[in-house]
Image (cartoon, rainbow, N blue to C red; front, side, top):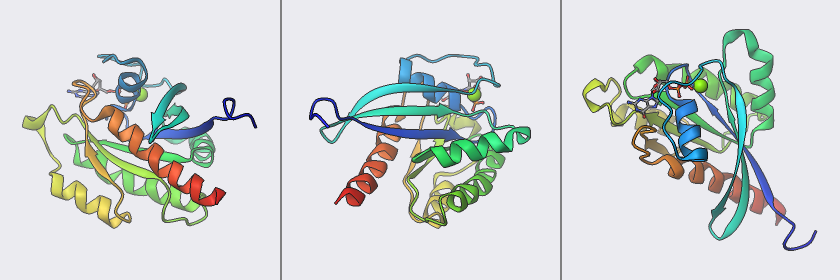
Length: 181
Ligand code: GDP
Ligand code: MG
């Protein structure tokens, strides 16, 4: 492995209910643009090289569009991904509640590992007037999941967008390095 040639490649899946802003977050991070209306059925992966704590990392981001019919697809990306952004919208309590089942599936697929790299993301923070989920409510959920980090983001305003990807990446890297030791 040449020093210059070696590069870590981490797979991150962006999951959550339809309409919470998964595609907008991904596009804002990868392309730096806010796309007003994204085809809700688009499920695709994107690559972006970033630097985390002085190390170059190639991120492969899976923007999911998980509909119930495609549970085998869901299982596939859950197996494949090293880390997860669990996204809800602060304007929908249901979208937060629906994450519980997804998180359970992830933990199960990862062999019961309670420390799977996960970030809980409350998107649409620019819509404060439509807020239906309080910060403390979401924070409680993040604590119940083993103190996973909780961020509020706005894909529209690019608030905290790189931060959530870097955070999950850093969690994956820590695991990766401790395994290599
Ligand atoms: P997905 O189904 O989770 O991929 O959701 P999309 O990324 O397609 O976004 C669904 C809708 O929410 C679109 O109309 C977006 O314009 C809107 N949206 C996404 N992120 C934000 C955000 O941060 N703020 C606001 N105000 N709207 C957003
Ligand atoms: Mg989408």
